[in-house]
Every structure is written in C-alpha cells, then in structure tokens.
Length: 395
Image 1 (cartoon, rainbow, N blue to C red):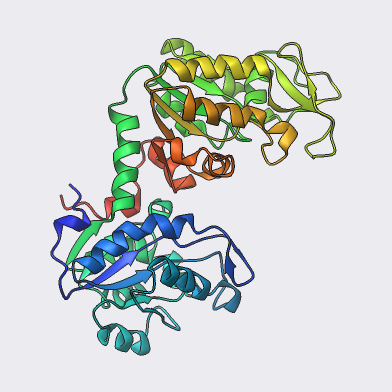
Image 2: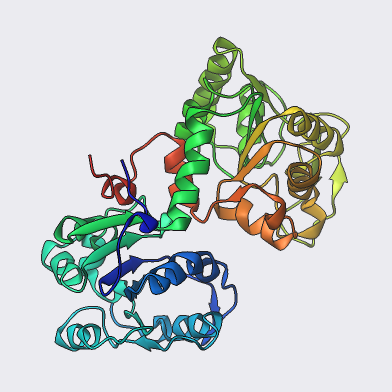
C-alpha cells in the first residue's frame, strides 16, 4: 500500500519533496517548464497544509559541481509559477551544515530548493551516509518524480527508510493509476503502439504486453527488423541483424496469444535520415534497395487509425518515424491525432519521444495521460518493480 500526500498531516513539518526538475535549458533559461508545472499541485498542497517545503532534484549529468547545471534558473521559474506568493530560496549545496541551517530557519510560506543532487556522486551511488544526510533535513518524504522512479538513488530510495513518514505526490499517483490500469485492468479492446529505433529496447515491453493486448501496432525503425525477419525487402533501413531470430520468436508468440501484431504495409522512404532526403511513398511493404524507411505510409496510417478508433484503451511509446523532420513526421502525427480526436478510449502516452511529439504537435492536452517518465514508463510497462515506488510501500 502507498500513502499519498493528502493522507498526511503536514502542519509545521519539514516536507522533503523529490521532484523531477531535469528540464531543457538554453544558457541560463528554462525552455520547457512542463516538468515544473506538473509538480505544482503537490508543492501547492504541501504549502497549503502548512508544511515547510524542501525541493530536491537532479539536472543533467554533471561530473561534479558545475555552474552550467545549477538549479538556479529552475528556482527562478518556480518562483514565477508560484506567483510571487512564496519566497524561493536556492541553497548552494544539497547537504552540509549551511543547508541544515537554512532548512531549520525556514519560515511559513518559504520554499527551499536544494542545489543539484548529482553534484555529489554519492546520489547515483545510493551512498548510505549521503542518504542519511538528506533524510536529516526532513520529517516527511514525498516522491513526485516518476521520471526517476526506476533509479535506486539516494534521493529516490536510499533516504526513505530514514524519514519518519513517506508518501507519493499527485503526479506520482496519476502515473501509478494510469499505467497500473493499463497493465492490470485495461478496458478492452486494448491496443498498444510501439515505435522507436530498436527492437532490443522494447523486448521486455513487447513480451509483457503480448498476452494482454488485442493488437500491437509496430512502427518506427524497429518495424524493419520484424519485416526483415519475415523475408520482406527493407533496402537500407535500419535493421538489428542480431535480433532477427528474436523478432521471429516474438511474431510466433503473438500468433500463440492470438494477438494481432500489425506491421507497416507501406512506407515513406528516403535516401538518408536527414531533411535533405527526398520523401517517396512505396506501393507496398517492400523498400527499394537504395532507399530506407523513414516513416509509415498512408495505408498503414489508415490501418493504425482504425485500430485506435475501435479501442477502449490505447498506450503508445515511440515515434512512427523521423518525426523531427516534417516530411517524415506524418505517421507520428496521424497516430497522435487518432488518439486525441478519433477515439473514445483511455489514451496513455508512455513518455520519451512520444510525449515530446504530442506536446510539439499540440495534442498533449487531449490525451488521458502523458507520462513524464520515458525509461520509468517502459520499465513499469515491462512489469518491473521501480525502486522509487517500491520504497514508498508501507507493507
């Protein structure tokens, strides 16, 4: 069982909230504040309940203290989102006597943002001494950082046993509820859409979903490995040669489970994966020897859209093609549009590039749920226990 923030009494307590503020930046400016905004309901609730709020996050992959990866721009944006009602204080470190003093002197309504956790290698190493130092700052631990829940780090797992009370935030609850329902009790028909470049990245997800879904739609470069395994000519398309026998086994497993594994029947092809390449439509699923598949074709889009239209649950992870280039983005756009507009299904976007695509294309607010965790979403859909969620369980 997991408790949630609104199950706790927070008045006067130091509330350590692990957030995911690993946001895109240009210089000293946050260019996409989605992850900060997603954490706001939990932060506001902690403040409304009289908690003394301490926020902790990583940013990037520093090798040690690095001014370019300071959370200062994040703290500035957070203060703006709080509307000037709460003073936001950025500490110069995340542990140490100075930080303890600042937390101890926190006044009602103030918010402390700890400096980048990964300035200390002990964070990713899940070092116990470091974990205990973080825990000493808190009376209550709240995890609202689903995007890091698949990592057993000091701030996501190691410190939790050393804090008196623990709970999940609202964003974490939303992720657990939507992804949990997809895995355990989806409304049928249940359709999964997988894309991206490699079958090897999605093996466990495919194996987990095949017995559960009514149809698995496969696009992106990973589709060419499946097509090649069936003896289809795929030209210069990206193929994992060492995974052909695996693709064959997965196709056989789909047949065994009576699950439709739907592959592209036509493609948009080019000479190279760049915007300089011409875009040509193939008449069927074969790709000319001098061409490579870079998107699903119009017939495939129509087939995928029909499956989405008839579904009651749809989960999607991975783009259908090179969506960063407009001429190869239509497959990804068509899937996003079908999920956003042409279905009554519960629609779940499994983070990563799919989340970026629906946000970029203006469909994010029309989905039932857009996950904030790429790797975490995949591991959840694989059926794995995520350390950051496991640490919150009370029994």
